View 1: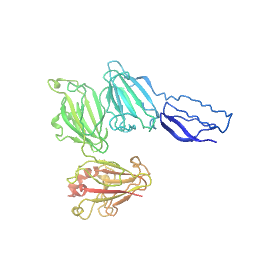
View 2: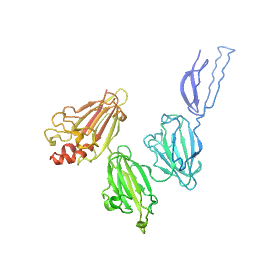
View 3: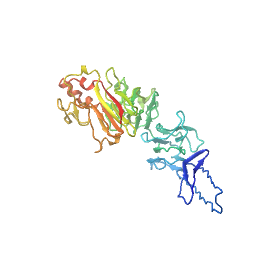
View 4: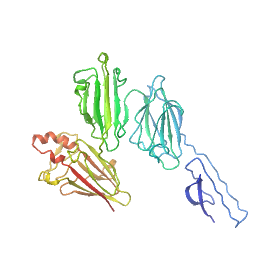
Length: 466
């Protein structure tokens, strides 16, 4: 007869709970590199055979000291073991990246997929990514990164970079996905709330090189937006700034232009620029070969980047609450794109109710605009004044954000006769896209249509239901 005994003990911690361990059992794997075996017998029977335990070391071969990148192999990828699946426990992986002597290594972590488990709020101690400036673990520490806080693009000071990935024996982590290449310029900038970062031209404030294109992706914390202030621009002037220029776009390289090609601070907005999404794309291009314009002054550009103090969007899992757009009770902030993910938990759903704030001031009758997705010309829009009466900027559907563009998503809009929504599962997504009002502004002015109907403050109240 088998007794229920601890299956394994590491230190004083029972791993795997209690289980019967007699007869022949199948292969099992511990969560760490240590195992405590406990053997128990009583005096009820003699001449028993005892046991035979076969132990085998399982090694995750994940390290390399000879990763190489040069101009013939301009970009390579480095991921945590088993990415994009969860990383194994108890890892100690390290890599040494080398490039051509006299050049530097550029290392960029994908901020969207970076996620490691960590129990300490102030320090990375459980699962983390460690980066050092040099070829060994004794090189100067650049930083340790964990949770959902990846580093901005890292440049080595010499021709090598040391990367280590650590996991403990408890909760598993998603890990990381990164690229490494010969350093030039550009990269990823991950903003921290309350801090300002700088994006500058190569060699700033000295003369920048000719025939150069640099691109940066600047990311704000989730639910926030990127603010850019032009601190300095001094470039070789050409008509319409076609030779050397700095340009800003919303979100990515194909997003809406926030600042057209600019080569002088005289043409920059003194109030700065703000993205509509949580990221901004910065492009610098130089085509001239002269540097005379750089004599006795700062040359190139210097952008001060920060995230907005207000936020719009994020994850919601509390029992009840209210969503109001930034700017209220004053005029709401225009040109925002926000996304809320409702996570009710197993056995629960969310009920949402839409209403305008101070409805007595809404023009009567309620006339809203419904439109196919923005970024099309006005011929793509159609008006329903007295039929649907729907608010065009809000959309809600069941499931996570990635389901939005699939056939599984059943989108709904809040209308005059449909102001409530109850999710079909424990997960729902609400999006707000202000581009419709932005795109229709000219049309509305031509026909004396009140813009207040589309910028009227609204609120959504939500609560968990069974």
